[in-house]
Image (cartoon, rainbow, N blue to C red; front, side):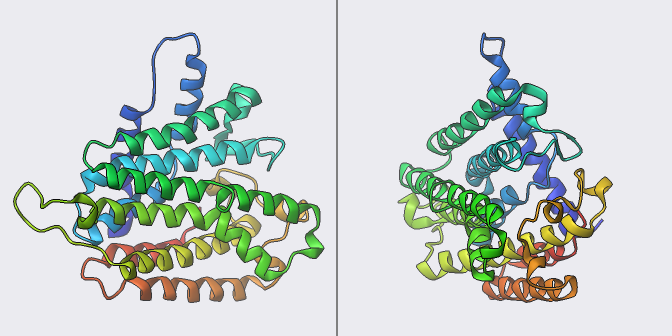
Length: 311
């Protein structure tokens, strides 16, 4: 197992344990929503977004304990988006990660409400982070809300639905803008929340050992956003390739659905080889954004790994 695979596995286990603790559970009249929230969030996934939150916190010398509640919040928002994406009124998918989607298990109404509950609970996880300051938590909530909202994931999903209804009218730039909002916004938020957790200016004090915390500049935040944009788009390019020619057993969902539905993807504009080259160029730009930082090895390895993933 490569070092990045080991690091991802370790982060996934850490995030899973934290989510297990954070997510609601109990025997109450409405506990079905607890069950649906936990079903959609626990027990699977690469946990790339939490990894990014923790990795950017480490990049700038922060304590990942402070970043972990933010990482869980990002994963809750991601899980909410998957629940809603899979609904019949959206992408109408029956399988996710090799098992039935949330609405196939709990019904559409309870799945919808579970997604809503995860979104709002994510903000509570940020607000209640005991390892950070109110200034950090407010900025984290604002960042996450913007990523999930009308100019982020929601806007991207709207564009995706509009594009599906008029595939011939979708330009390459329109497709990239859709991916920037639908996929890239939450990845950017994941990276930014890691920066916020490490930012000495937002702590307002030295750490408990008397050491000076690193203060981040706007250039540092810009580097995180640049990295996020490029790996987010590269991730989507590889997703489109796998969606066309991937291994269904590894993906845990059918391949060829985009083409059968006439959906516009990267492969509507270029060949598979050209798409791989495009993803490589994006990856190179992502690496360039962080390579000057001393603790960037894992972020560089992640960018390279995402390029070669098969699921």
